[in-house]
Image (cartoon, rainbow, N blue to C red):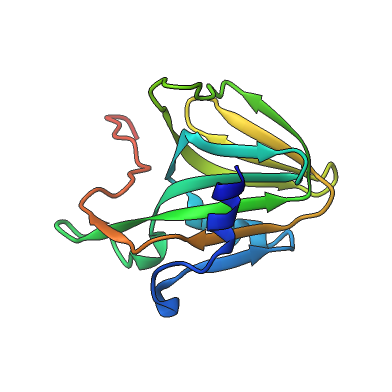
Length: 166
């Protein structure tokens, strides 16, 4: 865990003008972080909670929505590995999340959104397939930073469902 957190704290190996690095300390900031992390792929091997440091961290293979101007056929889209560090975590509850053990094959989860309830001071990471992680926090403080160069992909997440009825 400490090696993972150190990687999030150190300066990325990419040029500063290409690094997306954000801090979320206000309720309205959650919407920005959530939109940037929408459709990220997160491995159960890359989710960590360090209770002594009150830190919850994950590595997300996020789709670079900030580089999409329109959905054009044949366009190149991008993904990038990003580190997410949520601080001041008092407790963690999960629903349907299978945690990786030893040599088991890692599972990947699709992060749909991040919700914040300021009354109960809870952050909820909502994944597809009914999976969620709820974090009770003492104060809102989230860091997100790209850890590598974005790489091209031809696949863009599709949120539209075809239907014969309208």
